[in-house]
Length: 234
Image 1 (cartoon, rainbow, N blue to C red):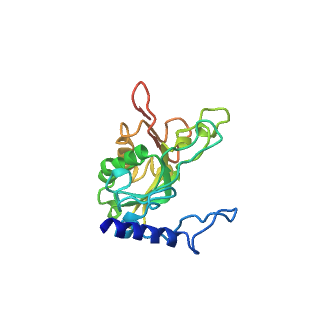
Image 2 (tube, rainbow, N blue to C red):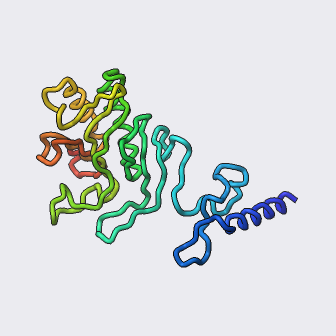
Image 3 (cartoon, helix red, strand yellow):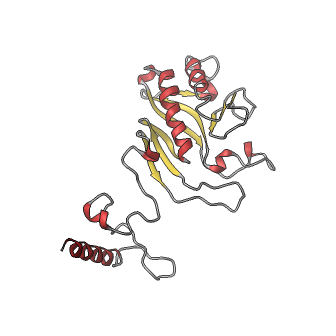
């Protein structure tokens, strides 16, 4: 009897999903199952054969990539006609360890986890109670298909693989900020910025900032590339 009830529910669910209200493909053919389907996590939603297929999916609240404190959503794979670009299993991160990102960052899970670790072990200890504590990170760049340092002919940047993020400032709860360009030298925030940047070494495979190579004077560049000689930290 139980099996009969479940089959009946599933059949009804399928009919609801295919009725008017769902979006259609560009050819006006078979309807695409959309938001008319029951919410994932509900009893009926758990019986829905379409609820876990394709499109974006949100994981448990605040537990993206299986890590408590990483918030955002999984998104479909990113492909590119440019060799070396694309992300097989990308996520769009909006907050890490309670700290918001000024723009949602598209990364792979390894890089999202590294960012989360850096906030906990690097940013929070360095900032302490200054300005009421950490409120946000200004994201200067995340996924983008381009060569290293925007130089024509250079190899594809780790940004093009979803394995890099650039941070240009740390925002404080009182409205103040620790800006990499203006506060790295001769500022009351210099010590905190240098401390958090130094603690990124080893959490990320590459750690670059002001004075590293002339291309990172106004931001921190972090990526999860693996180097045979160990982390690159400048």
